[in-house]
Amino acid sequence: MTALMQAALFNHPAIMRRLLRAGADTAARAENGKTALQLAKEKGHAECVKVLAEAAAAADGRAGAGGASSGAAAAAEDAPLLGQRVVLGGLSSRPELNGQRGVARSFEGGRYAVALEGGGESVRVRPGNLSPAAAERASSGAAAAPDAVIAAAERGEEEAVLAWLDSGGGGGGGGPAGG
Image 1 (cartoon, rainbow, N blue to C red):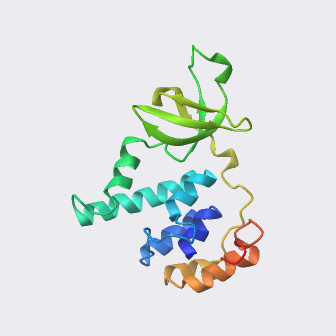
Image 2 (cartoon, rainbow, N blue to C red):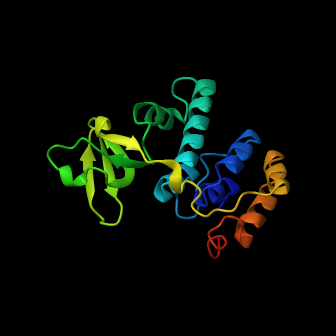
């Protein structure tokens, strides 16, 4: 697992930006086949998803049409709430869902599939009935990265960043076992 994946997993968008500037590979896959973007989406880390989508769009601009990142850039543009925590509202057919929170998991046919919090239910909702969830839970208990770790990320020193994340700096009690 790369430092970029660890930062995505533990919700550290500032570290991700520095790793990306230092040339981190967004297409790299973990042993389970997932990319940093997929890990960030699964965890509902909207800011990390945004950072990776912006990186994909920038790479798309450099690669031109047919670049490897064109799908991710298109998804970020067409479905800006993808991977983000959202609040449902204005639903007349199911008013009991208004105010519910969830994560926008996919976008197809002009509607988001939103996995609702706490119920396991998933609903399909038009973009006009969603708004980004307030940032009150953005910190998620993750520790702020120390200056030394940020500097290491700026230099592209993945080992130093991974060591900090594995030691519990990610706020998740350390990295995955055997990763």
